[in-house]
Image (cartoon, rainbow, N blue to C red; front, side, top):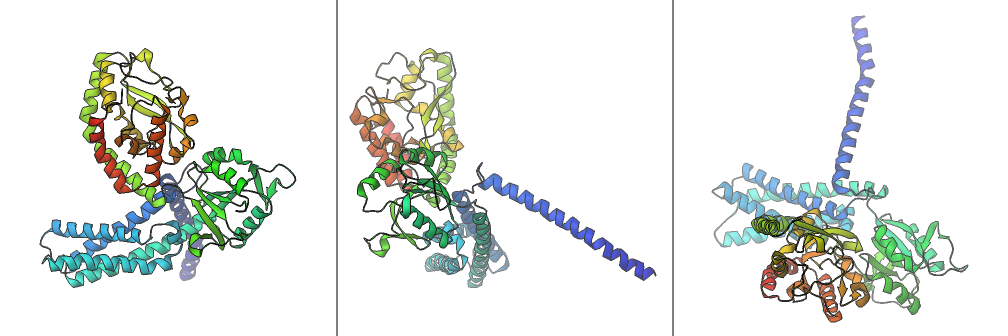
Length: 510
């Protein structure tokens, strides 16, 4: 009887134990989901692609560091000191991560296909190990024994491949939930749009979330919905919708033979920070296959890409945070002296906040040191500041001429509202002579396809300060667009280095 009772009690307790384990697992899963959302998601629940790619590259770097330390600790390490081991480990980990980037391992498309990444991971890691270790042995500076290197390579590549399969599973789940998709609109209606949508749905292109269709036709040829997707408006409403709805991709379904209508659409779109593709599904004119990019099996003619791809945005954000924080620390003593001078000369706040146009034409509050008397400040910049302007204080003249009044914008950089380098943000009522900037220059808003910067290509080429003529703002915008079209990390670093020289030699800032 005792044995039977004991068995009965065990079977009664097992379901309760399983329930407790299940509840604990569910709580842990919910907590992990909340933590993930806090780091990677926006207020709409959409996952940030740049943050996800940065996390993947950071995980690869960490794996290379951790497996390197493990290999050195368990193998027969040649270097004599811990500092030497750390230096070699960091060098190889950094080089291998950049080699993986060079081989297109850090993109959402790559992470969706882990099997294709296995070869790239092994090849990239071996190439870096062979180059660095071979050079070190030739210089009689062997970084590690052969068995240590072998253990490091095997363990690092195995873990990175495992990470890719885990990431692919997570991305599949996020895509199915509609949280890692490219928000897409179709420009152009009728039969062409319907066939395009049907083909994309047949191909099961899950990474696209089609929001709706825009069509300028108002007669019976333009239905209220196409293949179940609503008509959202006409072409004139496209720019505002793309900005407010955070659209990633626009597909133009107007036939390429309808040149006039096509140009009507494109003239409204090239200022937007979206990827633009022209559907070639029913095109009679066929270009070389390399001219097309495919979504599923639908050929697309790339017309315009966002200035910064997902990985470029990662690099620029890292640059802004790391270099921006360092510059803020270095500038802190100068900023303290400027603040003291402003306080001693005139009453009022030290900082001046002004609403200016930022990324995607959104308004942001930009920080500056106050350079005018409090009762004469101009929040909208409706009146140009000129030489010997009576509104500007003595301290104000100096800090405006040297651009020291712009230093508080480093806080805007760290907040993510601005970049260190980019087109300068303009105030809402800024004018060239007596005309608003946007009325003087066609395509003026194209400069808002990237974040505004504390300094930029225009500033180091002499186009800073007063804009009392149309030519000056035209030249400034031309320089801004040149920067956007030719962005690179090295160009940013060059502009940062050249800025102090430009400030010392510039003469047209008042």
